[in-house]
Amino acid sequence: MRPRKNPATRDADGRSPAVPRHGRIRAALALASVALLVLGCATTATSQAPAVADDTPVHSRNIQHVANLAKQAPFDAMFSPTTDLAFTGKHAIAGNFGGFTVYDIGDPRSPKVVSQVVCPGAQNDVSVAGDLLFLSTDDSRSDDSCQSTPKPATDKSAWEGIKIFDISDVAHPRYVTAVETPCGSHTHTLVPGKGKNRGAVYVYVSSYLPDASLPDCRPPHDKISIIKVALRDPARAAVVAEPVLFPDGGNPGGNGSTWYPTTGCHDLTAYPEKDLAAGACMGDGVLLDISAPERPYVITTQRDTANFAFWHSATFGNRGDKVVFTDELGGGFAATCNAGVGAEKGANAIYAIKGKGDRRTMELQSYYKIPRAQTATENCVAHYGALIPTWGRDVMVQAWYQGGVSVWDFTDARKPHEIAYFDRGPLSETQLLLGGAWSAYYYNGYIYVADTQKGLDVIDIRDLRTATAKFTRYDRFNPQTQVRHPR
Image (cartoon, rainbow, N blue to C red; front, side, top):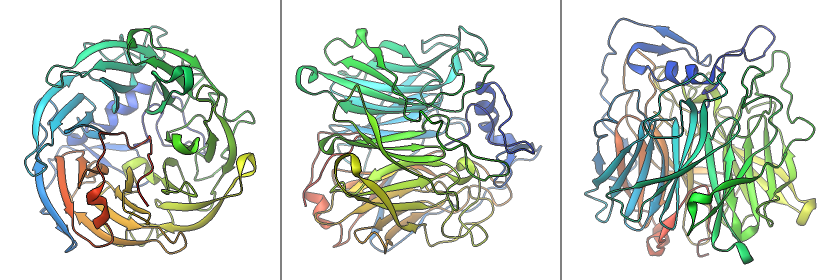
């Protein structure tokens, strides 16, 4: 989800007006009392409760919906959306704007809540390494504790960054420490250490939208932050590098432009085995060399000023010769899956990676967008997903907010096509509310979906094109740290 620090609305010159960062998040999440305007991401108060629609799931014949576990108090309010997922052993961990939830998925058809940790601080994206859980805080807070309260980002003492928990006992996660980072941590990506640093993990922190009025988040903010964490001594975690990715300033945007200028990155996906990372950085998509984890650098950059409004996230093909970038048109708040917006905006773009070493380039092959039109009250746009570990094919499962979940094949990068889907009806027949699938990932035989309002969905796909994935098992899975699966 994009709007968080400064609002996504623009003034007449196409610039984003300066607003304290925490204000936009809380305004956006007052979902029970606002209607969201299409593409503007502005809010309008309403005194009427939303008219509840029939949101019974529909799906392709090769999909079976095997379980839903609704959000549990205190995370069950509309303004506490479920966000990203990470997996370790027989557990799935879901972030939430209010904290995180650990689920037992040992029996995927009967998931259970093991524990919940109240720790407010949007978006609370999660990842795991060993016995450690990492939690992103991109909401200016009074301090780094889980008892913090909101505080204006204009206050120098306000805190944002990465929190670290010990989850060796998943029933009782234990807070360990926190590391503050410039502009907070909207998302983060784990990169394993090498050689003498093999016992460490690097946390690549993505953040963006600086403002001159914010003492800890001032322009140009053309960098990411890298935190080094010794897995056996996480209390000593610290920022060890802040590499500048855009020394020329990146995409400048422009007067009346529909795309965002580059002022940081929204998300990174690392492919450590290939020494690569792909960065979705607002106005730019970048390919990074991460062979030296503390010294990543940009190999090549792409822009799409015709169709992309906001470069949001990335996924590599299994061989590392393709990369899918997503465009979060409307910031996740807008109804963009319709004929008026079209098939190339708010979509995925598939790029072929050509050449070798530092001479590699990315060449656009095609776009993919779900083929089902959604209603005007359904926020819908390309969002988080990852590969299904099928042998010899590139098949991705992906969340589309109220557009549901799409399973699609991009083995032929010029001819991507959907092979399965799962889709609920709108949350409301009269209001555009934030809802639907935030993230969707395949893990050890099943698709797990973090639905912003409905909680955890479990889906079984039975299709010959994905059948080999049933034979792949992982001990741990962080979707933004990609691993190669069998071919």
